[in-house]
Image (cartoon, rainbow over all chains, first blue to last red; front, side, top):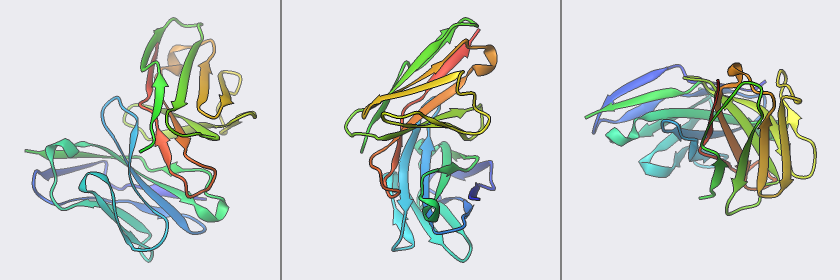
Length: 115
Length: 117
């Protein structure tokens, strides 16, 4: 069975500092990984995805994520946080080997960026 | 990027009434759409997968007679909450995949906040 863990309910960071939002996954086959962001009372916005290739994936709004197969992690990063980055972030995974049909979401991590 | 819209964005109804939520893919065709429910401060729970022209596939524990899903065209899926009760109050989000391949990305609508009085 596939699963996603986001170990931190909340991450606090000062504006201008680098940020990391953690995600680990478990799939039986090859993972297909995503990050989404949700602003209050809004749907999810796609940030980036990893299928194969370079372990460092660049996405929208200056975000990037690093795929680490040995640690089964896909942490979201940004070199310099903005107050406007404050939102709820979801990591998600699809299991390619089972057809990649169902996307499983982590519990979400709330990011607070303080000015 | 691909855009998914939902209507209405917010609805308040009386207990016992039915509510229909529309989900549209605006600039792409979606053979598969997904309906999620999100509780406060919780992750998304997949309710059902909607395939154009066929019956929806419901997740375990989701009542198919209560949450009616219709995917009549490649750009429209509807979720009808029948005989709504206060416990159905939630944030409902639809999603559409921009192709049939597992590689395709899921795009999400802005959500519909349902409040049942």
